[in-house]
Length: 346
Length: 264
Image (tube, chains in turn red, brown):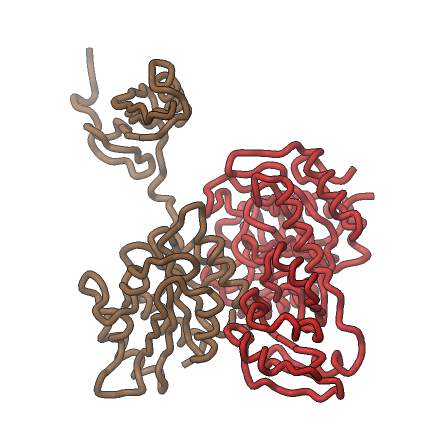
């Protein structure tokens, strides 16, 4: 069975998320689009930034273009509309602003290369996908800019395809380790149903506030908007009776460093989703061994991992070796790995 | 023998421009690089062959130096065979009318009933304050006053409130400050760009802003000698400011964008 066929029944919106630039994200997207076309699916394609330029602004290496087939629904800002090498029929002019003009929702009338762009923010992205659904897309693929892992936030997509590759490090071991860290982070367990989940699920995206819940399910508002720079305040607020700490924003190493490790052992830190974690692979493992317990309101499905054995810095790994090492490391979580430069799954 | 023209063409064809050395369109280019081989005939020939592959005809090694560890530094002259169509060049620029400081102050009086709060820093490992100081400090740079002076001293509580946090500020501290002050815009300066360290740092900044839910509530700007508006946008910033931009460019953009986004 084809790659897209195996995903179609499970997911509607899929984000292609890069571990870093040049991890083979656009190559992966082109592969998927071709598969989808062969299977007769109408797909929507959008991006979290401008993508599909011939050259990459950061490294000036040649970047694969995004080739779109007839009837694909695509989002393009006004200024890039004229640059498209394909026939585009405008379906809707949206109010989502980008520095390159408002976003247009278009239907591809004639196959060709297109520069895709979408709104930069998660909130607008979600609304845009709803708009696109209205135009009859079977599936939507979101191409992320650089390593904007934040766009993997569950509110924008049902699952992600994580694109990784040699560019991460000259050591294959580190490429695999860092990728596994992200995959396991994304699959952080969800907070079970119960008083804590009920209390925290009422929190909205508009109001950020840090909450604690004690052993009698009493909720206290700490009165701070962000945990950034507030590690000490958190430490003070956590008592013997505290069971949960809800942080709506980022969880960083310096926040955790300011909390007494003993206090950390007795509590569960609850985050909206795993993209709020900003802790490196090694540190994360250390903290977990010392009793750090993190749960999320919503985790992220990783539909597949793609590997690119070529790094623009001028080195490469053996195709089979990298793919096999990655597949072995991801065996436990049952995530398929495919090489975007060698041609799909086995 | 009959020639239609007696002299060579001396007018510039903007659809096919190439470097000027001694005469128009001779394509002369100077390149310098280091090869990981010992100085000698073979190294010079390697340099010439490499230059040819770069599209430089008649490559000529005009200088070479043994770097002492079996490496050789060379300077090669050659004639570039490529041309660029200048008329088709498209550069993404910050689109706002540039107002000078006095005009910015007037614009704030006309459009805002509150002060505009801007928080800036040189972030990550970067210890250079030259960029953020040039934009924010009262004395400014090169005869262009900084954002700290973008207010009317006779009308306190209006105009711009500029908070410069200095250098080596972690992204999270900058964001915490911006949240505390309910800033309208965050300025990030990046001077050091070795091994693309600025890309990693700027990307981390955007991700933290998304995680903190302020990405669409504040304007995010970055600047530095290797920053272009196009790069800034690709990284997820609203605007980027490269060399030869001053406080008035930054202020003009912020004020007009705030009005455009109806945050007046």
